[in-house]
Amino acid sequence: MKFDAQDCILVGKYRIAPTIYDFRLKNPELASITAPGQFAHILIPGKTLRRPISVCDVEDDVIRVVFEVRGEGTAILSEFKVGDTVNIIAPLGRGFDIPKDKKIIFVGGGIGVPPMLYSAKTAGNSCIVINGFRDKSAVILTEDFKGIGCTLIETTDNGSYGIHGFVTGPLAEVIDGADMVCACGPTPMLKNIAKMAKEHAKECFVSLEQRMACGVGACLGCAVGIKKEDGSVTYKHVCKNGPVFNAEEVAW
Image (tube, rainbow, N blue to C red; front, top):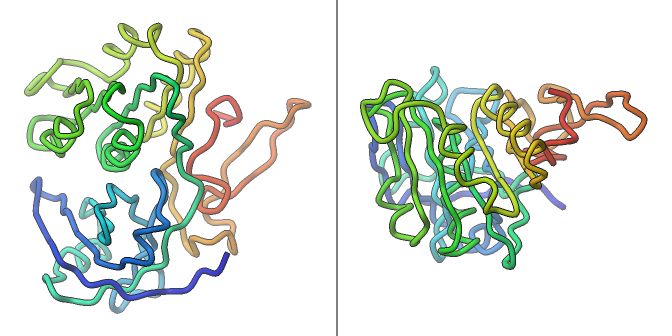
């Protein structure tokens, strides 16, 4: 696959939480080939390294990305205006393989929630989505998930919105009725979900959050430990071999 940079037009920009932005990037060619769980590598003016942002959704010829301002690069990105040109390399990585004949639970945590939207939409309205946030001010995309007809469960760490506690609480109540679990979020959350899925003999796929440099597997900046059949550990690139992995393969 060629990794050519292409220009997109920013046709929509929304601030959906105090530090979280929703961008709509128009590029018919890229939108037509983007799968759930993949990401875009976005050029930041004045910065050498691009920023990897998960694809939140695809709507016709528009790729939707949702990101949190966490440093100087994403702060610069947040200053883009509607009508500006945004240069991206996309779609990158291996996303979620969404079977149509299985009941799937999608679990998102924090900024790991956005990629669950396109994934759940692809699965259809029979899926269950469990999203966890720090507090009420960090809750995002509620109406979007409701709009696709899924069963939506939301939690907050401090109980200021939804269920008080972590996503593993409601997951424990519904996991026996599912065939598969797909999750994206902080590593401790993913580790606990992987453990729970194994205990309940459910397939589990996780999208790993890892710092990336090149985004196409040319460097070792996003290496992650993966278990081999003999029990030893090898390393794979999150950007190229992932970000989605079978949870049982990950050397937690």
